[in-house]
Length: 389
Image (spheres, rainbow, N blue to C red):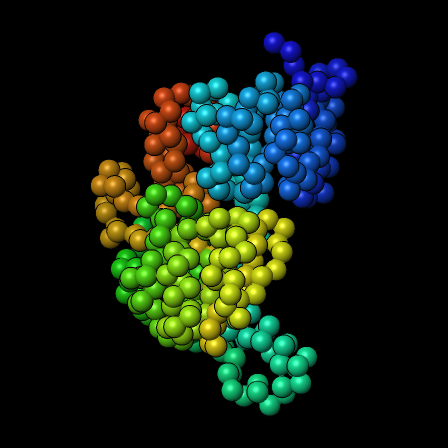
């Protein structure tokens, strides 16, 4: 079979223009690969043309399935810049024995900071205050006062790399941090200075701010539906920076329109780009701004806004993580979202049971193991040597 090379044994790697300079420097420093850039918004036909002679591709949010694989006869590996891979057709890769890699820490800091920014924007009513000054409505600023984070309760859905980094930032602002994650031991959460919660509805009812950081799975789609949103305080805010669909958009629109919650901010939508007739966009308080990877929205009702999501309901702690898995506990945490600074050792076991084994059982091929990334395979007992592709 022909190999995708330029010069002597130089394989082409199709890489997004948004990849960091440090990443490009790594590629450019090697003499066995050549980086070929593509814009994240490239039309599908152009992407297929670029795929014709590449050995590897690093994806942003582009859907990747059989049509893309048909266009890439020399493809050896696919990677995702980030932890989520719901836009990638894993079974299609499996059928062709092409491994999928993910970047476990690629954007965890960025997403954590984005979530904090969105919550602070909602609480301090940044956009609204700016608008009042520009429109000369100086005295209106007293009608809807900003909200302090100090002393408030923040509920973090998911305690992976993004969730743990978010918790550190909110704790530094002297908030009371609740953690909901069915796959993390309560002792671990409590030992890091936060309060673990098992009953999601009860935790939602306590929270002043909710920030979601779980992957999109069959168990987490619609995690925040009308019934769960109804448990929120009228003064509470919700933010989703995970995946669209974890918060039911129609239910969110209804509670915002009826002033049943203070507000919301969305970094993601169920359909992206979201249609211009999406009812959420008709809310005067809903603001959007372009982000490097996803859309961000700042908006909501008079008291707040919404953002992004991460982890759903967590069952009560069992004696053994295997027991939780066998009992069908919701798969809330992305594998590479685990292993935060002080929990890396215990998370290796969780990764093995949550991602690697379910995928192997479904796909029945060894290369499916690579979906967690070579840097993790080397650490998981029974998975082999962790050879880089």
